[in-house]
Amino acid sequence: MKNSIARILLMLVLFTSCKVTFITGYDEVLDQTLNRMKKEFNVHYIKLSRTLTDTDPHNQDFTNFQDYYDNVQADLITITDRTERLDGKSAIVKQQVQNLDSSFNILINLHKRGLSDGDSRPDIRDAINSSIDAVIFLQEALKTTGEAN
Amino acid sequence: MPDFNFTQVISDAIALTKNELGKTFKKVKPFAEHEFQQFSENALFLANLKLQGTIDDAELQSRIQLQKLALANVLLAIKGVGIVSAQNVVNGVLGIVGKAVETAIGVAIPV
Image 1 (cartoon, one colour):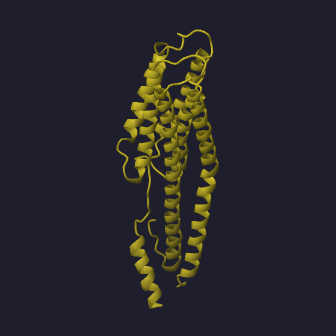
Image 2 (cartoon, helix red, strand yellow):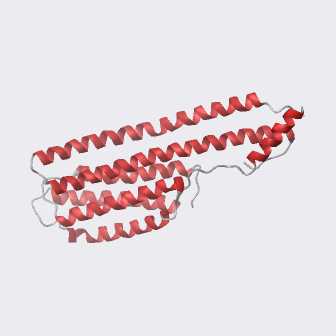
Image 3 (tube, chains in turn red, orange):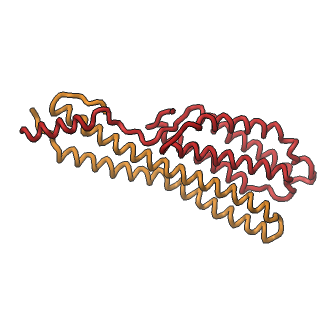
């Protein structure tokens, strides 16, 4: 009996205020922004691939899509800022956002360099979608157990 | 006063752990499989474009880099989900213990 009480008291001490959070990083603004970025990217891709499969070599010029890229860069600033202070295991979300930022910068540079007709570049569509989906996937998992930092 | 049933507590905790780890694998398997498949297909697609002379080295590098960044994000998501599940296990066990303590001695511990 004494042994039981001692063990219970020990557990009481050990487990007081012990709820563990290994990873936070769920952010509603981040989640919503990502979903919107995904849609806008796919609209952009549909329009761009139309220009890549026609006979006009200039309608895919970067300047014709400047508005889209300006908006996406603004979104990247927003989501980068929101994850900037995540650290420890929550830095996973920050790293994901950094990778996404790098991906869009590659896309922008590729487009500025010039995109020739004949190749609709489905690999680029897939890569950007996968990158965004991966961040959303983790956000969904965090939604039920994590909390915004 | 009822005894604190350590055997039952541990048994429940183990059952929870198995359950959570099982869920983690089930959660990520379709996602991971799809993404890895897509990555392989796109890598092959790009290699063929280079072979055909459709794209040069610089463009190949950039487009492969996009694939690598996407894959990195997928792997980070899988890692993150694993951590969330581990977190769930610990918190679940704390919940089981907390309930047992409250039953045994009538004290609610904040878990």
